[in-house]
Length: 230
Length: 157
Image (cartoon, rainbow over all chains, first blue to last red):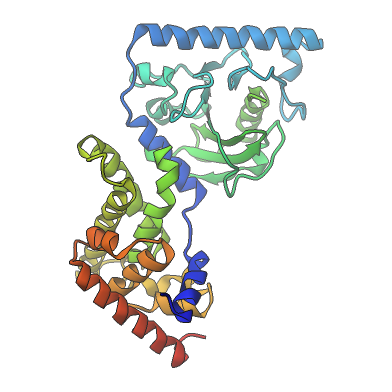
């Protein structure tokens, strides 16, 4: 039988702090990255097939809406790319960019989309195709290099993931350094967002510690090409 | 998913011991990763929650000992505080009861948090802290008495 004092003590439980959403997402990704990576060539072919199917779906959707890919290129276009509901997370293809999408993976793996204006490093290898963090690519970025990494977490809305509409804006990002072993010489812009059905984490990495306005425009243009499942 | 079901509690156990957010981040992360790596050896007939909390508690205590050792050796910066809860404004701002909990010793504070805020039974606490259940009961009683004293004497405003 609990006393009145114990009841008051229990009622104060909300005073106990909760973990920050950024560290929570970071730990979750580390755990997912520690899961055995698949080296099954058939699995890789499946992923590649999904990427191709998604690219075709994007092109067909844009064609049906009467838009050309060229319309989306440019800084802060202010117009979000649209996607069919079943389309995977990914970036609309653009010259000078390498992109990867895992497709809508099954839990616990978070659907992941990556984009870089440099080739993905050989050392990142097969794991990059599985959506794992391209740390070597990022640490080797030249001064004008940019990598975008996007993770989707399903379920209930997470605290600190505000409702946002696309295109996400770099001006809304939190700027930092040293993300998950990335050299502190590389700038890192973080955007957290809640979209219909997803908590979205976007990390934009620059080869420079202080990206120029031109580099920010380049990254924003690629961010404008991000397509999320609706 | 296992992570999302248990992460917050694992982190809160680490925070209960350390009282410093950054330290809790590190200890909880180590605990979660270590626990997942050891999942293959886990007896699935047992509940997972207390097992994870034990990982968190042990990692947090290891971190606390490291910080105390560094402080005694002339460590640097706020991170090396021997009494981390002196820097726990988050809990201190949670009202008089929370502030009183923050002023307990880490042994008493952990047992209060585990029982009253994280809903662990005395048997589960005994497993987490690796103590006899009778010891848990007596520590819980002393912790409650100390809390009453702190509140009645208006140590907390």
